[in-house]
Image (tube, rainbow, N blue to C red):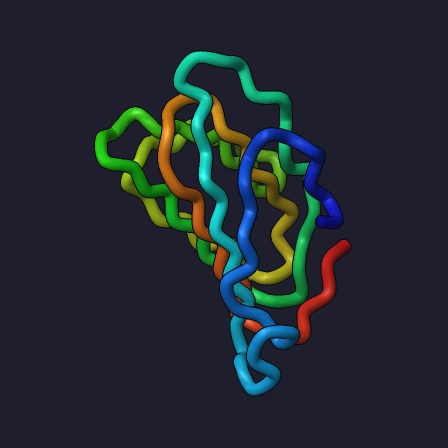
Length: 113
């Protein structure tokens, strides 16, 4: 996956133009568990030419992500929704906890840089 490093995060592409050509959304689900270990950085700063929505979900509030939007960095705790407008440089890295990170890119034909 461009702009993402290899880690132990399990990533599943749930919806894309490769799966359903008529779809106008890209959906990827990431299963995260860093309860007892340090996770290396996963995401490299990048941007898309389409809006993106991230969902951070867990059974408790212990899943924490570091979200960067342009020059601003936030610590975000589950449950949370992050809206990333097209053209905004961003990255998302898990800090601690266990749960699910969902990435929705609101286009099936987007470009990343």
